[in-house]
Image 1 (cartoon, one colour):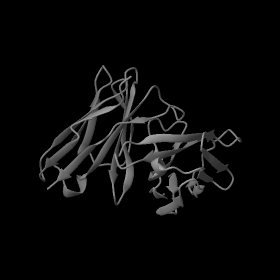
Image 2 (cartoon, rainbow over the protein chains, first blue to last red; image 1 turned 180 degrees about the horizontal axis):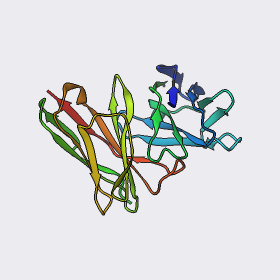
Image 3 (cartoon, rainbow over the protein chains, first blue to last red; image 1 turned 180 degrees about the vertical axis):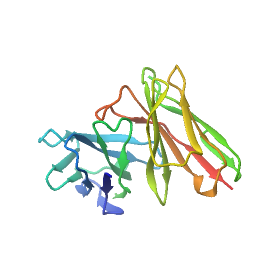
Length: 115
Length: 114
């Protein structure tokens, strides 16, 4: 079974600084996708960034970027120039290309941003 | 375009009762997935519906069921409620199936079982 592990229950960062959230996963599949979702206090899950396993290039979305290490099964999220609005629970998620509709989530990391 | 809507937003039930939750996907989206979120177990996949058929199912007892209508709206039903069913239930819709299709989440239904 595929598993996703986020080893940092909580992280904090100063506004305008950079923070990296860690995620590792376990799978025997070669074709899969990885995601980072943000869940603010409103509980609305929002997709932050996604990575296709077959792509070697790390995905980037504005201030958010990932470090995808396929051999190590590692998928970390880097948030640059942190803003107060980045404070939320962040979930790493995995899906196989054939696991239709099913995301497997990590336990989440609570990110606090200090002004 | 309106986002995913879920009704009701909050629900209080007692043990043994049953409950039905509703999810309206984004217009044009045909896949609807349901998740249960609890502090202890985190986010767990319940099932996915596409074209009115359940296509994928998580490891939940048969008390959890669902259906999808021709307009892609979906309902989830939990029978014989237990205290452990207290959770935030999230639904997500996507345009198609397959891993690259982004899942858009609704605000959730908070179910409390007393």
